[in-house]
Length: 231
Image (cartoon, rainbow, N blue to C red):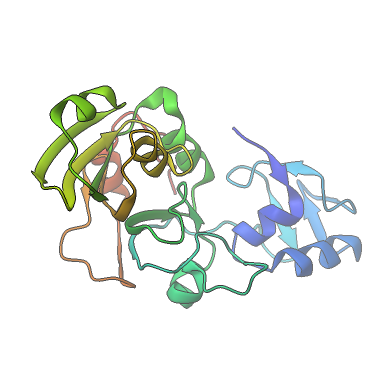
C-alpha cells in the first residue's frame, strides 16, 4: 500500500488543509499508532494508519467515490497558482476528502472519477491494469481510415469532411494530453475533447458541474479486480 506524508494524509482525510495539517503536526497535536509524531513528512498509509488529532478517535475518511462531469475551463488540481477555477471549487463540500483519479486538462470535459480511496485510485490509473477510457473527439480536417489505423488505441471515425472529423477514441491508459498529442502528430488539431466512459462507468445524462455518488458495491462490480477498500 502506498505511503504518503502525514500532512498530505490529513488533508486527504478531509480533516485539515495541507498547511493546517503541517502546523498541527509541528505543534504535537497528532499521534500515529498512539505515538506523537512531530515530522509532517512522516510516511503513513492513510487507509491503515491509526491517526489521531488532539487526542480524539482515530481518523478515517468515509469511503466515497463520485462520477463528476468536469466542465470546460476548470483545472483538475486542488489549488491553482494562476488562480483558475478548480474541480474542487465547483464541487465545494462534495469534493472534501476526495482525490481525482487521473486528470483532465483545462479544455477537456467529461467524466472524472474522484475517490477517498488512494489505493483504488492508484489501481485505476496503473497502465498495467488497462482500464479503458472512451473519448468523443472533434478535430480539424478529414481523418482518413489509414490515419486512424496508424494511431494507438481503438479509433472509430464517425463522420469526416474537409472541415472536421468526429471520432470515438478508446485508450487503455491516461497519459497527459495523449489524445491531443496523437492527433497533432498526424496534423489534426483537436477542437473538442470529452471523456464519456471510464471502465464501464458512463457519464450518461449527468450535466456539466454535477456529480453522482457511486456505491461501493457498484464500484466493486464495475472493477472486480480492483482493491475496493472495505469500511
